[in-house]
Amino acid sequence: MKSANGSLAALVGVVLIGMTGFGVFLPIFPFLALEVGATPTATTIAMGAYSLGQLISSPFWGRLSDRLGRKPILIAGLIGGVLSYLWIAQARSVEELGAARLFGGLMAGNVGAAFAAAADLATDKTRARNMGLLGAAVGFGFIAGPALGALLIGGEPSREGFALVCYASAGLGVLATLAALLLFRETLSAEARLPAGVDRPRRMQLLASRPALTRFVIVMFLMIAAQALMETVFGLWADAELGWGPREVGWTLAALGVGAVLLQGGGAGAASRALGERLTLFIGLALFAAGLGGLAVSHEVSTTAAALTALVFGLGLATPALNALIAAQAAEHERGAVMGLSQSAGALGRVAGPLGAGALFDAYSSAAPFVAGAVLILCALFVALGEPAKEIIGSSN
Image (spheres, helix red, strand yellow):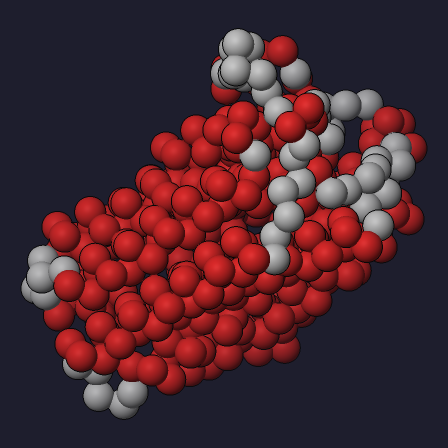
């Protein structure tokens, strides 16, 4: 038990440091792209290249981790991330920035191996807790990273300041690599690995043979698409409806991140143990949809706060429960492939979700993207209810 807890703590630390290194870079990328002469359209395409790379590579990294173990895949991805940050620091065109982001995304497909390792360490009762802790580490990285990036860039952004942030991201990636090398113990035993002579699991074969897995992967795609859609237009909506500027929007999003981290780090696991993972997912999706619907009709700070509270509770409950349910669909030697498939679905959602957000905002109203997001979550809820309601309510897993 001590060994398992120590490995889980090391895994959380690796993910936290790595995601903080990534988060440091987020606030500066649009300005860095503009500094090298990119148009806003080219800037968003270059930013989206990361998710495209992750979409392509996640299943590959997951399957490879089933053969070689989780540790070498984690380390390879972290090293690749360091190289991408160093490349960005030297980029002189938006094409170079996009290529570096694509490379970083291709290497970041190893996140599925991290979630597979958390599943390796889990029992039926601790699976949601482990997924929640990893989700909390990812969430905290997205809170601490941008704050550190804003601190490093200074009041007068310059090429040297941009490079400093890139080098800081690379430095954090090096720390994460050292932590993985020295502290993380392999979670997949040699006996449990996929034998070399056995065909690796194929994505379509996995989905075709397991209807429950297919449903949960679709739910992952819809949920992440709605989340990405909301994050893309929230600043525009807050400016139009509440008169907020970047500072108010930034603090609000940071507060949402803190709430999600706290829930995923403890509350979600307790809810899953008490209610079961399926019912926790059902409640989380319902709250998420209610939060998006609330934003669509909100015009005041008080109603916005209520809607965002429902939204963050929904995300905080649904995300670890869904990851746990997906992990439960895999045999021990398939967890990397299955979690890689899940990460691909999430990456596809992050690519697809924002595509129509701006068009809906311009063509209809500031509320239209939130209505679309709520519809996506209601569709996810319908898909999740593909199993009989009695099974969902009565399940303890």
